[in-house]
Image 1: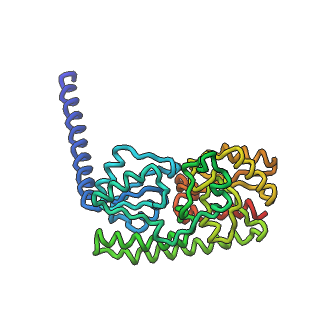
Image 2: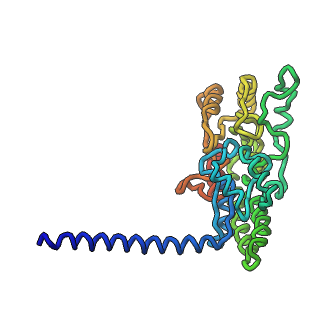
Image 3: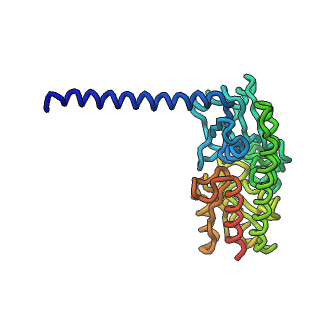
Length: 328
């Protein structure tokens, strides 16, 4: 019996090798099939969901900024830079959102890569608190604003309005048509845009429970301007001044926010899933024990199962949380 054991071992070894070769061959077939599809690089998980809804299995989609990360505070790896430079299409937000990617995107566009920035194409609006948080109010001795990350142009957070996302889907379709004119991209875009608009209507119905005198928002940073514009709210204060979470609020600015909340009778600060709530918690504690910090999804989609892992889910989840917080 012992004389047959080496043969058994050899047979098992051969079987393992054969199975490995078959698996490798199958993997190679799948990889070569994927290589025949265009590669689309998308900066954020939010626009990644939009693109994936449009392309289905007809393109390879890679999202650069991971779920839960702050788009303002993200720096790409060398592999991600290389992927952008070799992509068939890059879909970015623009308007200064991807601060750590701006040079990379500009270089790729200069090298001939098709870089589509969608935010400038969907009727962007200015930041709503510019006048109240002006350079004159918080300037240094040289007359310059100490916050280099403050924004004074158009607000990049266009995805917080589902109607603008619907418009963006149509704009992305034109770039997809340039990749492959044989696919009915527009038909897909129209269908998806209708779903987004319906989500906007449903969100508005959820928010109808909030009384007119309670439609005041204090937010972590100026990310809810389009939400406020779409659903008839007013942003009365922010923890981080300007349109970026990279700003550094002064003690005077935080004290001013506390005063604003007390004057406006606001008892909720809306934080963000992609940013720590440390400062928001401190402001809430300063105003009083009855003030709560409620987390919304702003710069990123949520993890799978969160209810905010799609743009439509994010829209409805945010509306539900605002309605529950302010509609009581």
